[in-house]
Length: 578
View 1: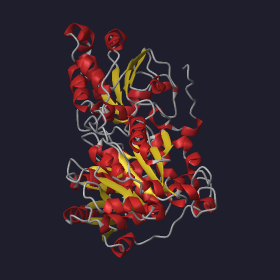
View 2: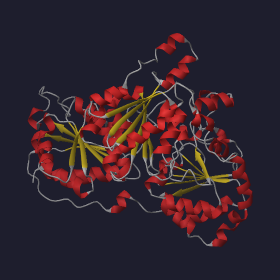
View 3: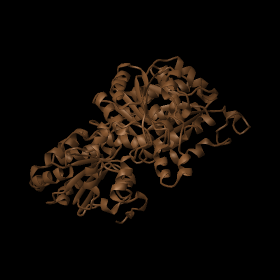
View 4: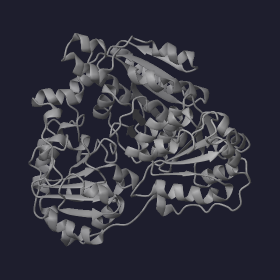
């Protein structure tokens, strides 16, 4: 068996059914092996960055990992932004890069990225959990096992990279693959002593809330979270990456916390009135804490459950850390003796009254009238609301980075985990959503899939529409086309016309662009055309681009700033000891 065949067998045995790639000389042997088997399907992408983003989306939707293969030199460096996004969002990703023949290294060979060339492994050193070079075939299974274990580790979860010289790819390899233990994908442990202390820390307080982060998604804790919240009538807010892990139509849902989140969540968690906050699986970054606002910290106790010790002690003083995965933690709390929760049960009426005051009017979203707006150009909130009306409840929505992403996070309702995806957490890579959605749709073909992106993002990776159309991937891609780099332009408008003009874009015809690449294209200029257009796109069972002409209206976060009379840049910061 060749090294390339062995690597494909590893992917097959680990449940990976697609490998995203862009052909080139140093991965010719891998492509030959791909063409001679049927277990792992090759997806040839338009751009190496798109291939890496597709692997990212595949990983997020599948709960396994994603894999891509590119050539050395510019092929690998074109994926640096995607690797950075995966690293900061802790997405398990396997990057395979071909390398020049071993006896060509350091001799001025074409696209030499070896340690004697441009040293691509040095370039990606700070954005990968582990990188290895394969110098000889006998190390193939050893290196693959080491890489995948590091990729899935709860302490350094993220992308890994294997560099393979072309001559090594063609060599015969001894040995075989031992499938990874399931526990590596879903670790199950928790600090039982911490769970026992939980009840005493909550005490008799009534203003208690749960803040669920992506750790709840990774550990598949949704059912246990709902059960625990309902048992004690505790309201639940989520981070944006965890949107849907607690159904947003549930009476106890406060929606999303953060800049473009929902007022009930923001008021509950950052008004300074909360007594006890139970954070589960969130690193409490800038967006999740309103720029580390001191008001985010509860008055009595911050209880934080996370599987990673680096997250638990980072930015806020924690009264009770509970190390372990979220699902096992909730299982332990749900299994606790009823007398331990007697105080939480007794405070339910007061908490019910508090929740009612937070959700005055019964809606999560700000300015619900925007969802029915007849304005032309179209209001983005109307476009998101009408898309939600048409798309099935189980739809996976991918929101890109920009003003459109803020509107999507705020106005789209999610009812299950792994149904709302965004890279707006740390990096916010523009152009991520379309390729990521392609990867997700291949991972979960039975689920409807839609994208909300903008014209600025389309200029970056919109060409991957060609990949979706070529492989006949059903995808509803909605472009909120405001002829601008939306969020930056809203800021620039306050400075002056000269700066504002730098953020303007031509009004491109994205429907025509889509048709030129083999997809369907629809243009919408009237809000009454939205539902028919989205219905047509969903029913087409094909790649469809809906070019929605919207205005550059203020996003939820900017409205929040204006109403509160403050600018996030001037908020005081919480210190590590706060």
